[in-house]
Image (cartoon, rainbow, N blue to C red):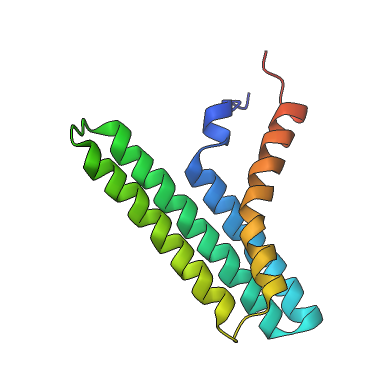
Length: 129
């Protein structure tokens, strides 16, 4: 009999990143075959940027909750440095002329859609009994 995964295991940040990577590769190949390499490169870049952002957030939250950090200013510095880095890279990606904006936006929203579809699929198709 096959073991059923728990809700927390199915929606762990590692599984979300792996599912997003596979989905992004498949969609990138489909975009490349239909509309060319520039849109596919933009899509894969936006998706990779969002996966890196999600990994950094999960890693920072893991560090902050795993260890007892008594210095609150250190926590604020880590969080604000991460936010500043994310928006600076995002600003640069939209300003440079190598990428299509439609592909970047579609790639950025891919991770959010994977999380949504994993949660919906688990709640609809997996019995909790």
